[in-house]
Image (tube, rainbow, N blue to C red; front, side, top):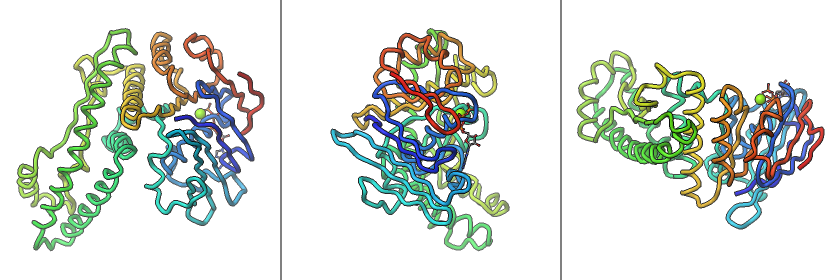
Amino acid sequence: MLIKEVYLENFRNYDKQKIELNDHVNVFYGKNAQGKTNILEALYFCSLGRSFRTHREQELIQFENEHSKIVVKYFKNNRDSEIEIALHKNERKSIKLNKIKLNKNSELVGNINLVLFSPDDIIMLKEGPAQRRKFLDILISQLKIKYLYELNEYNKVLEQRNAMLKSKRIDGIEVWNEQLATKCEKISAYRKEYVDKLQEQLTTIHPKLTNELETIRIQYKSNFKNKEQFLNLLEQKQELDLLRGYTSEGIHRDDFEILINEVPLNAYGSQGQHKTAILSLKMSELMIVKDEIGENPILLLDDVTSELDTSRISSIFENIQDYQVLITCTDVNSILKYDSLTKNIKLYNIDRGAIQNKGE
Ligand SMILES: Nc1ncnc2c1ncn2[C@@H]1O[C@H](COP(=O)(O)OP(=O)(O)OP(=O)(O)O)[C@@H](O)[C@H]1O
Ligand SMILES: [Mg+2]
């Protein structure tokens, strides 16, 4: 798929700005705090209905303004389409797909397929498992509508079970255990399937990015093995759960670990190794989405060149030649020195929330 145009109105530090995109490489360069990442954020917002920087949508509306609008025109499945999101200070956001209002955020997900690399993604590998689950959940829910539904259902059952535990009235908890196990089984199957798919892609991509110096392995960690085992586990942990007032076992505790050359990354990895591993995961995501939807997703690379050596950056750029890419950077020469990107490139100089000059 291709993004043709992005229009921003009162979004972050933009007044009114139309951005006509090139089908291949788009580089947004400029000094710090000028609005480069804001453009990627707007596009991401139209893809998933949420920002990668905040859950407070109000922050997206330009200071001193009451409303904000983003319109993205794109080409997918051989047709032109358009997504429009309007934000109002004290109202729910309104989402339109081809001028028709969507009722739920989940109806938006899956229309614009993109993969974002942000410097903050490193947190995903360094900190707790919640971010890693989020990565898997976003990947799968973009591709399987059913997944998001199952996950919501799971959370409802979990909430009910936790309420019981908290109130210390657990008559009939077996019914909830059974339901929890059934939901776990479904979600776990999806997660296993997609971790396997990630591994398949990672095996090819990671050695390429590291000059064949590193191997990578992703290990899915879950206390759910099968329904019977899980029901036993719930029973074993019941006393503890009652004391704590919440459910200690289930797919809400799942995690994955990354091993580089068979050594755990989070314990021994360097900063550059973390960044490369994240990029390998993102590139794998890109390939999986491409295989499943039969279209090339868009790649958003926020500040990708810092902290990586030239050979790693060079191989990233060589591997994304078929994709439409939006890159942000402070120094445009840090991008222009790579031959693989310069064939079909459009540059945008971002200054105080506006595009100052552009050229092919
Ligand atoms: N709601 C808002 N209204 C007006 N301006 C805002 C709003 N939210 C953020 N900004 C401004 O946007 C700018 C930051 O934009 P952005 O994060 O896109 O910068 P950047 O060009 O990516 O910078 P860096 O190179 O440091 O990453 C800041 O100047 C900030 O004050
Ligand atoms: Mg930025």
